[in-house]
View (cartoon, rainbow, N blue to C red):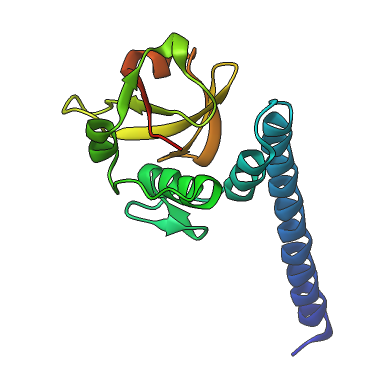
Length: 164
């Protein structure tokens, strides 16, 4: 191999290594921003710590661990860890078995339910405080969102509570 080919190959490898470090750093900053959003909420420290551990976890239908989780898997994991309370596996079952509550009566740890497909309950999240809730978004993974968002309000069905 010619000397110029070695330099070109070395240049390409260096470029790849440097660009991958840059992407990694950007993701780290993004997760810190999500974490800060959670830290600003005055909620139970155990709930806050557990949700913080899950933030950024990718969405995976049927998933229930930090490698990938769906909405009901996420809610189940939080309830099991923070409240030592197992819940039904699906969001539809959770809704059918919980005590229904008004949005104005939502408290930290209550569940919020949505109908995104027009066929009944299809999504669940955990209410935190100040109109914020944590959930496993199919497009963004585990995030914190606002109930006052226009898109969210359009599909919001109501709140529910399980005795903790």
